[in-house]
Length: 102
Image (cartoon, rainbow, N blue to C red; front, side):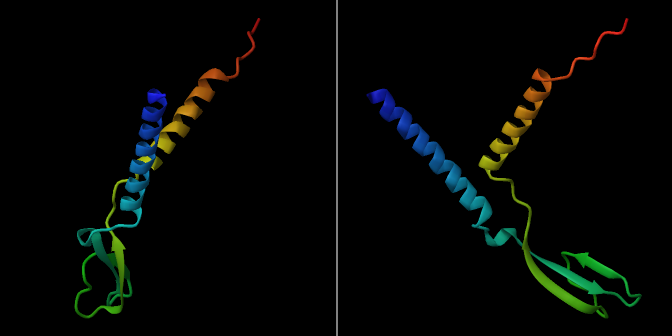
């Protein structure tokens, strides 16, 4: 009975950690992770997209708020590795055998 309780607590703890990690990396963005993205047209008509402000004389200046890249949530990494492992295993187990030539 104690083993079952320990296993259930471990499972609930793991699910809780994965949910917290997902929440932090997808919804909670610290101010240090915010970045402004700018786009503008220069005097030659070329369109520029950068994270620095447009120089003087630029036209059609647009500013958008964005986020710097953050690492993927752990649950997404686990899912990707599981899918890659499944594809590798399927390829190894079910590869087509070529008939022998006489």
